[in-house]
Image (cartoon, rainbow, N blue to C red; front, side):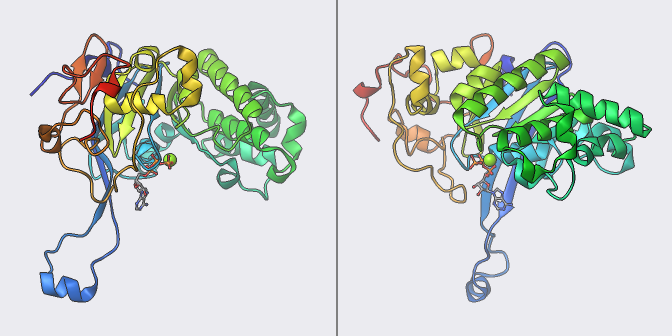
Length: 354
Ligand SMILES: Nc1ncnc2c1ncn2[C@@H]1O[C@H](COP(=O)(O)OP(=O)(O)OP(=O)(O)O)[C@@H](O)[C@H]1O
Ligand SMILES: [Mg+2]
């Protein structure tokens, strides 16, 4: 067995640890007649949402997971906060094995909080902001007495840059950006060690987005938080994260320090993902591989390397052999069979499509 990629191993105990995580979703059912003809053993179709993901996040670190829609990012997020149970593999957050069940794990559950894309769906519109923000304090018995609750609520509002006047309002009375700050304040109320941020700015205007990204950056530094940031916006990953994991069809294909990976992407998929992101041109990196075609179905995943159907460098062996995430240099890892034969950056045009 090959050694663990060095970028996935840190000296201090990791605050998030995920090992060989697999999550498939059964979908549809063959029609009854077909099932009878083929026999009861006919396997049901499954969506390969996560297929063997492995990662570590150290204390105070921010890891971004990027990739196209449907590649499995939110499924990883949901497993980390216990909203989904993995089929196989292990996940632990702040020293507690996921899933967190029962009263014993109550204290552990507040150590990892999720902030998702839509604050509207996450908050009870009928309740006041005061009720929403203080709920974790009451549920976990963190603060007792009305005065102390009010004081903590005011503190939490200040942490997200809002005045205490907002406490009497209801979600419908405030803007989307303000509401996302409330979601963050509520997540912070449980004094988490890890925030899982699933497209936290996707529903916001550009200017509001920038303010929220700065807020998240400040909060991480001030509170020593660790982030698992899920985003399809690469510039947000670059701004907020230390490391990035590039995901394709349920697998990580490249992991490494965000500056290094974005400046010199190794995996053909990372190269094409960056080439497709206009805002990333500011790095001065030459456009490389055009991302062609649709992502294959997560039900019918390609054999071998899952990216081979879109990869200009694919050879017949890429269609048969499944690449593993292997160490590359000190702190990067790449899953590509042809990694040592690929042309230097910017030379993609020389290769022809499979
Ligand atoms: N409950 C479910 N039942 C069946 N399939 C699901 C379920 N949840 C997710 N999937 C499928 O699993 C795959 C991964 O979904 P996931 O939501 O994790 O992707 P994502 O990377 O977060 O996408 P997006 O960027 O669009 O949010 C997709 O093919 C999706 O359709
Ligand atoms: Mg998602």
